[in-house]
Image 1 (cartoon, rainbow, N blue to C red):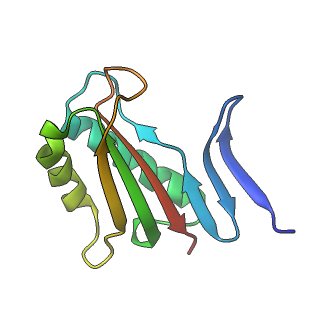
Image 2 (cartoon, rainbow, N blue to C red):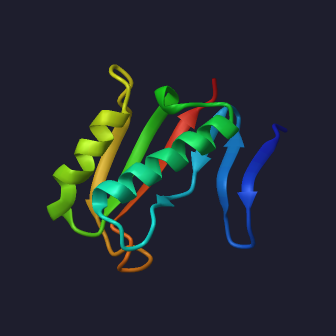
Length: 116
């Protein structure tokens, strides 16, 4: 049976789980109350950090789910996302609008990546 590695595990969830060469990240959020752009930048930095800890990077992302509290800010989030994704390495992605854990969160991103 293959090993399951859990990263930054708490009583409710782990920030990342690795199994069979696949990295599953929990939904990442930015600082409550910040702008959509600032929250997106922080989320992407957290994704970079967690993927590195799990032996992967943003060029290995397979899928991304982006949840936004208000799709009116879609272009603002996309401007930050587009600057972050390496050319030729865009993952399959879905974006939707949803009530997030608190009204102060404006964007949450969940990714699945292959290890290097």
